Image 1 (cartoon, rainbow, N blue to C red):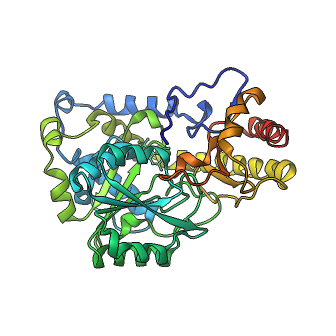
Image 2 (image 1 turned 90 degrees about the vertical axis):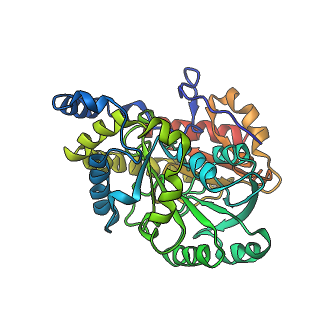
Length: 378
Ligand SMILES: Cc1ncc(COP(=O)(O)O)c(C=O)c1O
């Protein structure tokens, strides 16, 4: 099931579309980026507007390595980092560099619906593996590995989209071990790793790149702004060598070279770190507002676990409900959500729905849940 997204994120006036997984306008950092851009342009040398290093400007990678070392609490190295234009491109790039048509990719489900389209672009055979409250179920993975012989495994280890679940530390260890034993690459989409709202989060898979076949993908989309189109891949030397042996990288050099200078200045000025704190404060308030409103209005109709980070609530309805049917009627109630089946490669999760708290303030979230309650109980 494919689903197209509207990227200008402008629902019709008056509609509260809790399906939109993008930040609200008040959380998009125009002033921060103006300050970082001014700071950079005041010292920029003309030759920096030429092509950049294949792997990404070394000054940017050093700054990013320091930033990740601090954020992850472990030692990230500039030589393990490769610039991307965000995780969408990183997923595509990993498929392009490390798979061939007909290969198998194991995907935890429910999973990021737009990634399925990328896997299909590369003609990969998708094998789903279930998740529980601690993320990907390792026993289920072990059961399918011998027969499916995957090339890649795609996971969103922290605060997953749509489930809001986090892979436990012990499962992370086991997953990395299995990647070596069965010779597949773990493509870890760590898009929400730096957005925990209630305490800690297990070590990023980016910290485990030297222990197994792990490629970690990170992005500034969720911690600064999606429009920057800037992210990174973190991997070991032998995978980096294969990644860099790319025709289009060789032709164009560092992707998004200019933006990387601006973001380097934002990080060096301390703006990125304080912005993440601000984001976490705002999102924590929104999680609470959504959780409370759901409890007040829909606890008899929906089951969910409050997410500890990321962007999403994943809600289960009674088995016989098809949220696609409800979705078709949502416009009448001036509300929106994502129906569950788009998060499955096989049309599963028909009685689930995904809500995002990123795009609306607490007042609008409460109003949106009230409208959802009118729809679900009508
Ligand atoms: C799991 C996941 N991966 C990737 C993306 C897209 O990331 P980017 O903007 O870096 O391409 C998103 C955005 O919603 C996401 O939720």
